[in-house]
Image 1 (cartoon, rainbow, N blue to C red):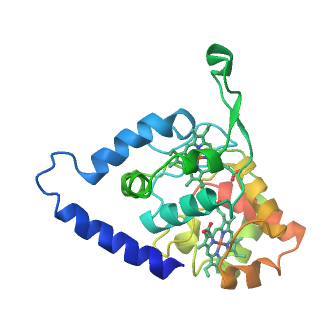
Image 2: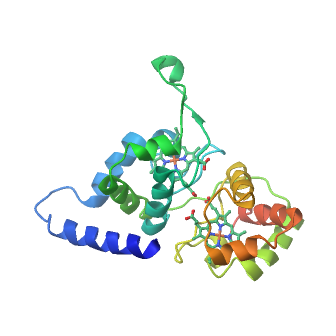
Length: 212
Ligand code: HEC
Ligand code: HEC
């Protein structure tokens, strides 16, 4: 699946280079789309202020594209999200990432992905358990570091940035991943299956602890 995506992105980059006469760069188009359709929940730069909503700033373009595709196809189910101004608009009270991605065209998702990768990820500041975080770091270095590199701060390997993500969101994802309700690469699955509930708690405390 990933190879097709990379191919698609390459074709996309070629197609934008032929649009040299256009004044808006892909990043500009992505920024505008993000402000209109995403910033209400993910903020202007993808660093969310809500503990149920993930930080997505700095995500690699391939990973954003891949995840949006999983939401769009329904392979990854999203929790319903309450809309803040529903009382004012009166028409809709809930939406979810499945509904949001279905309303987007492929080239719009690509432009958003190009905008997001340029945004700086700002870790959420949260209380954490120091002893558990220390234990979590050991497990991480042993089983997860080769994809979630630089202690979970870097997604150069196209694996999610875990460090500085919101605790509530991480807990919800550890749950759906444990229940097999969300895609994960085969090599991650093999390692994830080895984790005890205690290991998972420790890993989460490590991921919410500040990076040096
Ligand atoms: C109404 C609030 C809301 C809006 C608007 C919204 N999102 Fe989300 N987004 C969420 C929530 C909540 C989740 C976590 C969903 C889950 O997995 O249950 C999420 C998850 C995601 C994820 C997965 C992150 C990860 O680490 O796996 C990506 C990527 C994402 N959103 C991108 C976008 C983009 C791009 C837009 C605009 C086109 C957008 N979202 C609009 C609330 C929102
Ligand atoms: C083979 C590489 C690889 C290994 C090893 C790996 N992961 Fe992942 N991980 C990924 C990729 C790729 C994703 C994004 C999956 C997707 O949604 O497309 C991911 C996603 C995640 C997510 C979801 C993050 C989010 O923002 O929603 C969590 C949590 C996670 N990994 C934890 C772990 C833990 C804990 C380990 C070690 C036990 C681990 N991973 C090992 C590649 C890996």
